[in-house]
Image (cartoon, rainbow, N blue to C red):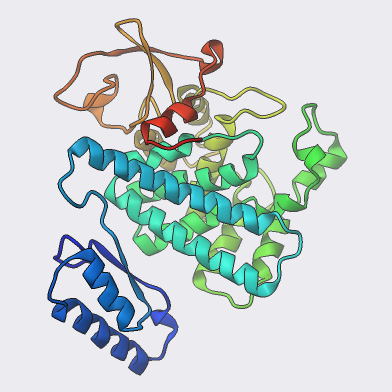
Amino acid sequence: MNTSSPATSSLSSRSVASADLPSRLRCVRKLLSALVYTPERKYDKLEAAVKAANIPFRLNKPLGSGKKSRADMNLERRAYTFFTYSKLVVLYRNLISQQKVIASERAFLLKKIAITIQALVDICFEDDHTFLGVSAVKSGEAYAVHHAANVAILAIALGEKLGFSKVELADIGMGAVFHDVGLRDCPADILMRPDPLDPKDRTLIEQHPMKSVEFLLNQRSFSKSTLSQIVVAFEHHRNYDGSGYPFGSRRPDIFSRIVTIADVYDAMTTQRPWRNAFMPDETLGKMSRDAGRHFDPALMKVFVNTLGLFPVGTLIRIDSGDLGVVIYGGGEGERLSRPTPAGAYRWSIVMTEDPRKFGIQPSGIIAAAAGVEQ
């Protein structure tokens, strides 16, 4: 819900949907009274009025409020995006780090993750370029949690380009976060082994989709979103042409096909114990050549256009001879080889470079550009 006041950019409901109709109507009346009859149209005054009304709503403070330059507003937006991403990483880490989580704590963490995913969906709608920037954050040591968050970011971005609603994007994001949750039961020495796996260990790894399903089934109640997460967890290693695992007689659901693309892209662009990370543009090329077999060809085309020819995190060499890291991507035709916004072109991109060759960590540069310390 949006209001016309610049001090109240968005309003979030915490639990009204689960209440009975008379209660919801009373809450809405109190909300309208608080918003309409508060004399000063300032964020702190409106926030105090909503809190005093004791209703399950909260005001989200708008980004870029006050007299700030465009550069300051962009920096603030990026910092908020990184903060929300980091929050998702921490929540997911807390959930999977404990083998046995009490039911109440589990429910609390799942609810907080769902709220964070909804916030990321809102960010994607406001500025998908800034949103995509956090997907370039990589961590080989904390791979599981960053991979879950990155796949969610990439899947939401692709879903947004496909025209899905915010509710559907939240379901895609939740499915992406939990697609590999079953790997928490797999021994770390197998997951991090630099040598090829033997058939026994490979079989153990390939059981993780069912383990993920088991984790998601262990909930107090089920919703349409939960069922969607279960489908994605089961299908994300099944290929477009019917190959992959576990075996299935039908083509994977579209949410699963979206998460598969996001999953493979993030995995390939991350350093792993058994191989070096592929460069972003190299990864898109490899995946595009595998479209029609591993990936849905139509979705793959949209994904390439979403990330652009030089995705966020790509190390580039410009025609001045200098190196740069792409921190603001996208697929607009007029910007494919231009490292600066329209109207301010000063250089053109000549080629991409391997960051390992120069000892550069792109994710650190991207975080620094957002004013975030890693």
